[in-house]
Length: 261
Length: 148
Image 1 (cartoon, rainbow over the protein chains, first blue to last red):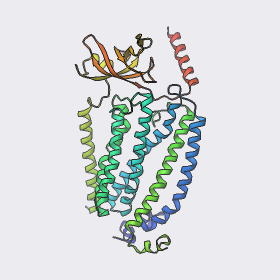
Image 2 (cartoon, each protein chain N blue to C red; image 1 turned 60 degrees about the vertical axis):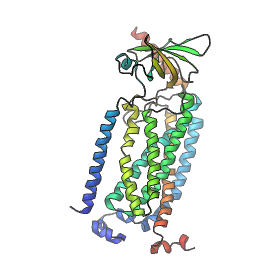
Image 3 (cartoon, rainbow over the protein chains, first blue to last red; image 1 turned 180 degrees about the vertical axis):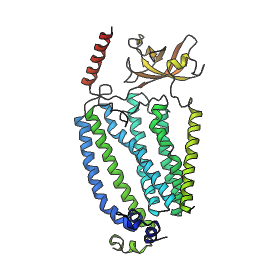
Image 4 (spheres, each protein chain N blue to C red; image 1 turned 90 degrees about the horizontal axis):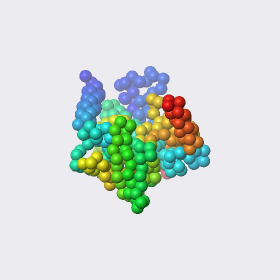
């Protein structure tokens, strides 16, 4: 079942309009990812510039916090992404465990460092924001603590994977850890609802209209899109490197222009 | 059952077990995960006695009193049902305001006075320009006058 052709026949996917399992083959995915990366970088730059412009020049001063609130344009997108990337990572991990596909594990591995970066940014900007506004860099309330646990989960995932030499076994062990850690995501999200926390409730949620001025919201959403595109661009770049490393003995890799020259 | 189905069943079952375990653990931790107690909870005796804990609520309008040394303050924390007086010596955070959220850490004395060693400001999730805030305040005032 090592090659892609056997996979397709077994699942009878050939008859579908789009052959999704075809993209699960590293050999097919590698060039596709290469083609998509510049587009995601361009979108990241575009949304980032627009978001920063709106955030710094269009969005009004906040009535309570003055100019200091503007750190929200980094803090909130980073926090969202730290949670969302974990969900995506766990999704790939589950797919890898279930279908035994090689690419899924590589996707999970490639997402972890970006997720860790986002969690770190969230904690760091939160500390910078907390000191002037709340009066403390750090408090052990449920929201902050669960986000810190998320950061440790990412670090633990990376450490566990790099501790195991066999990549397929590393993928499996990492996948189990990633899936166990999923429990933490709803805890982070609902912590401000379930318990008394120093961290305020959500300004933007799916169930009710946002409690912030329109232009502030726009700045935040644009920055979130920029972070999203950036995360996709760097993870695709990383997954390409992982594919090359793990498939270096495969014929198609040796035929690649960038490898041959 | 194909091996693939078996794996899915294992993953699904494992996730369900972890989820249930998490719910049980969180339920057991419920009270310990509370960052602060509201005045109503304290009045009902839920806060630890003779120990340091945090009280959280709104600073009652017009209750802030400064001593002549400029550092010692007294204010009333309320959740609109019950209230406690808090005494604190030190610098208040920028966002500390009457009518806004506050979390103070300290001990509750026998006389009902809460002596705080740390005061944190808790702000809400609303972000708006000063003009909008002004309009909201005016509307509240108008609504209050109509009621009276």
